[in-house]
Length: 550
Image (cartoon, rainbow, N blue to C red; front, side, top):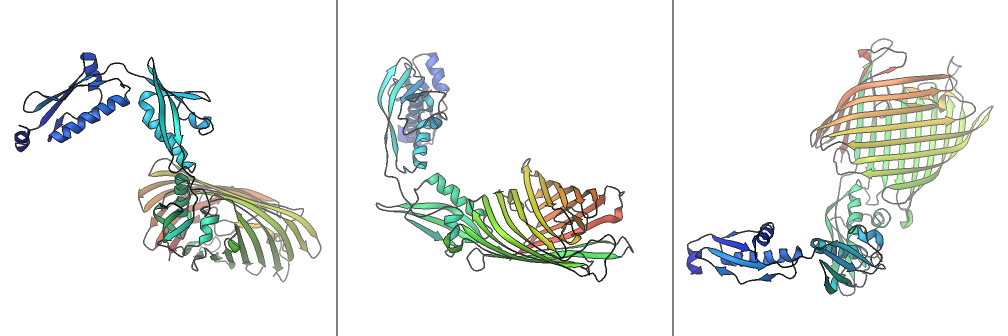
């Protein structure tokens, strides 16, 4: 008859009942299918129902034989009997510390814990994962000495641990020339480490934060009798960047159009060493020029130490020229934290043939011992990959002029953070601070700020200060995955102790960012004013920039 039913494609119905209406309602509360196209699927569902009743605590249930009422209706009858509501598990505190037990139970001691019986499978899986993450890759757990007491099942948790696995080999796929020092010192993936699946996944994911590599698929592990091999799947990314912008505004004196801008070229990992070479050139259109070259050699001699050297030349028309040289030794603590110690020298030449009123320019040479700390976190966002940045730089040294020697201290800090309100809306915040502590001050040693990378709405490096604090804010709205608009609201306070001057600066405007095949294109419209100025539309600065990868 069954073959006849199946040949006619008749829908089969399953009806499940208990010994009374209460038990029948309990069974009905457990979700299960009751209509099937084949008899085999119907039988499989009866086994599934029995397993769900067991997980619910009906361990003493009785199942009757499946009976056929007519051509299409089948009946299954259960006697549920007593329900066990909780499980009392005796465990070893040396294997599972209390901080682990607290995550699965609110009723526990150092010898046992209580859980709802329906959570048994979930809890055993959690504890097994804990053992696996501790390096017991093939650990297994079982409940033994099972005893019913009223509505509680008591049992002893027995475990069979495996030999902890040690990483014997690391094999790279896709980008075989990836600099191996970044595995050991950046992501901390090393041979002879104890293997943990959870830790490995986390460490491998951190390689996505490097500008020159990406993880194409999760890592895989090959276990053999005597060894453990890790397979990492990477690809090389274009990390070289070209960043530049052109700004234009009206001259305050003769209303002529003035152009200013900068060039920022970064060459990264072209030798598959993780090395970086940075070239920056800036000009404000008024004979103010800056040239900066930095080179970084990471993880020298396979150690956590990175060497950075730099040269910067700044020329202020025919007033002065500064030359600065530095060497820093960085130590990588982990993927987020880095510290450094270094040395910096600075020489300045007075180019004025005759002194000018209000400009205290002196030739000098200075040297400083430097130190600093940086912290970075990242997010999965192509437009805004860095979520949080914090840096602190300190300098202690001496500045010597022809007539005077001064002990000086300098401090700089920068904080940036993105607060994601939802997938489309976010708030960007940045605070930059710099302070020079000295008994005397000269014009050509002051900090210079202003422009698209500082307070927007002002010309590049047009402001001089012995102390400044700049706050940048943006409200960002993502129009699409590659296009966003944002507001500009900046504030700054600065002091110039050389001229006994201080002032407040404000800037507001809006901008657009577009991620194209060529790179990230930005256009900003910002209007800045000092505390004593009134708003003028003619003061609006338009800044264009393009960060191109190649």
